[in-house]
Image 1 (cartoon, one colour):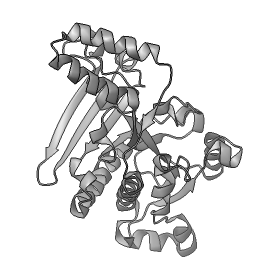
Image 2 (cartoon, rainbow, N blue to C red; image 1 turned 30 degrees about the vertical axis):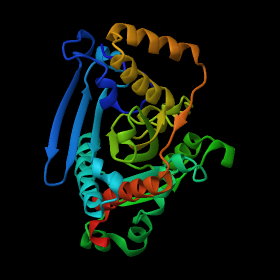
Image 3 (tube, rainbow, N blue to C red; image 1 turned 180 degrees about the vertical axis):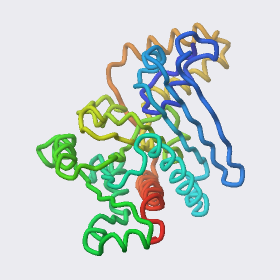
Image 4 (tube, rainbow, N blue to C red; image 1 turned 45 degrees about the horizontal axis):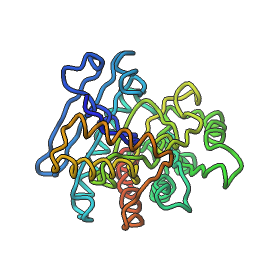
Length: 307
């Protein structure tokens, strides 16, 4: 098994830890699609049984990853392509989770005041919500513009509200009874190249803060009473991952074997109890661009003719 080390929320990175013939992941399948004209790579990881879930450390379900390295360069045309691709994948996943969903709640998780954690609130700010319009203007208006009724909430964090975001969201779900909840949150990755250039969509729900070891109340069908689709973009990398990558390359150049290299790096990580996370220097622009892209994808799903 190829141990990469470092925390990650991305199923595609967890799958990279295992060789193709590893018995533990017989219940995990991966399919890839390349959109050359869009410069986009879509990977779908499906965990189909308990053994696969145990090996991956993730619930049974579907994990779709949309990657476009050019996003880091701020190319607007590519950003639009990514939004369109995300919308396509999101609609497909929603159809499998709940056919003909009529009411959707979109939740932006995270702390607006902490830039690497602000993806959810930033995305919510860019949404063109429709629930109030449909309530005011009626069914004829909804049909005319092919709308899905959806509303949005930026739940904040415990230090700001005194309430767990899960408590707030559950109360709203119990009041509105949405068919599907879409939760947007910042993620952790093992690769600096994936920061702001990768979006993961999954039908398994989400554990806010899990990527940085700050587990909060899970948001899923069991806790909310409604299916939850999680949409996330990595904005931080575990510093141990960067150290492992740099030191590993150095040791290999010095002729250290792969086994010895792994032993040295693992021992260094075990002796360092401090967990550090790193963000790129352009994090403000990265989070804004990622939030705008996710919001546009959701708008394309539910109110395309209004944008």
